[in-house]
Length: 253
View 1: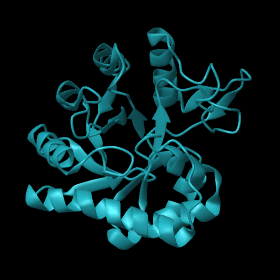
View 2: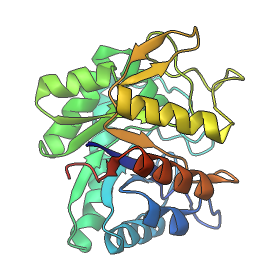
View 3: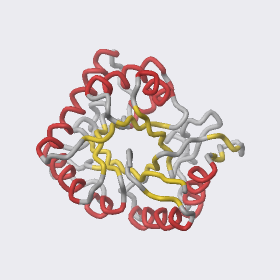
View 4: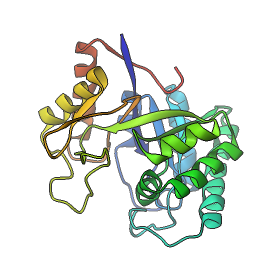
């Protein structure tokens, strides 16, 4: 029987601004990637998210990104490797502190946004990100884009990895995600997205924009919890995976 993790980027509210449907989404997923306060989130939100994830038995992960609140971490910043390294250490440490407070393990790390994309395409940046995670805790699971430099460098350094796929994103022939700047980057049709998920998990393939089926490893599926129909979408993915005889288990399970 195939198995897969369902992860979601959470804890993205801050101050008086509420983003996402965290309370409703957490019971439906198996891993939570908690924003660390740089691209989104704040200390109170982090604390509440960690506490809620623990209550539901959801694996907790740090989700570090660039210090770009206005751009939601999706803008590439010109930072040195030393700055990227320290920035990631700092952010993982924030989530680890609240995990310690609630006596729950920090399970994984998944880079966010532009940092994720930079590492996926640039082996030198990927190595820096992976090294920071390893130096914080070599037992953390490193989550990133399937077939990317991030996965490759993390494995080289000795980290356990989980290759991530996306339910609602389209893929380039080289395995990279289509840029969000492109109109067709996001799959809007629920049935199409679910069919893509099932194919990735059960066949290890995804249809790229040129119509070619490319190999992909699906250890964990990223589902987004902030859309108008996000909750129903996550429920439908769970039902479809169950119907395809796929077990849904948290990372490391």
